[in-house]
Length: 146
Image 1: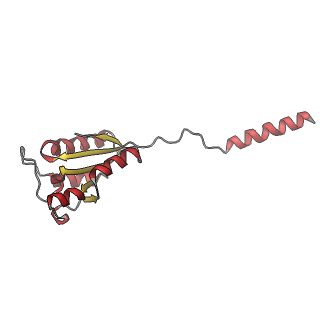
Image 2: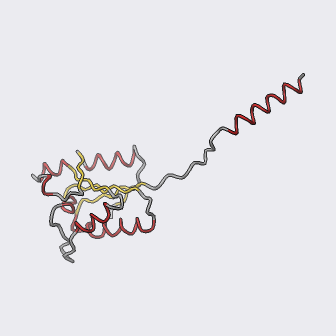
Image 3: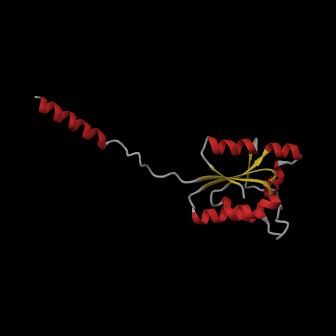
């Protein structure tokens, strides 16, 4: 009787473990927040970094958060001062690859800017700095400042 009880316990244990999903689930794709606060120094370099990032790791989830003078990157007609390269087509291409571009609304208020002056690819966030912190802490995004 003891042998039968022992075999029953082992059988239940083996069968129950067959239905447990292994803890080695699919690895999550990388999530990254790019922080832009000065378009003149970070604009073109940042957009190129993001393009290169996606070329090597296309499944990466990327959010670009702009504030202060970084919001200029997303304004209608904005272009790199040194090379005269327009940002909008580069941003549009990245947006089509899943990149999200966010503008700080505190900066809008402080600089007296209107949402209508930004390209269509722009999304808005109440605070750029809070958004960056939340992405890092709550959603485990890696932080990059080009």
